[in-house]
Length: 108
Image (cartoon, rainbow, N blue to C red):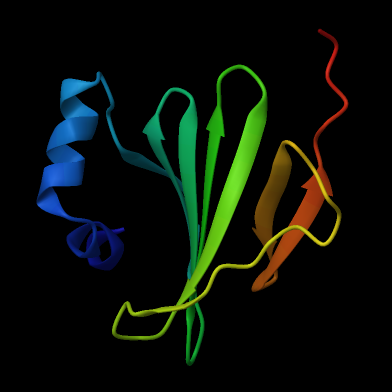
């Protein structure tokens, strides 16, 4: 968490605390970290050898994700999209890969 949280802007962290957020690491295993930013928002980060995968998931109440791939200098390389059209695409990082799930089945 140390290295990643230093990469997040200080103003973003300040905003999270003002909104009632208490960012903390939920799970960490080698290059993978899952961080709770608020009660309804979490961040997954995987630091590969030549790139960094980032998935941000927010739930309000239906969960939806966005994904980004950065190089080692934190310059945006790509913004991957779900391979299936979805109103609420849900992504996670599994074994160093971004995995998408259609999350549109919601009981209104």
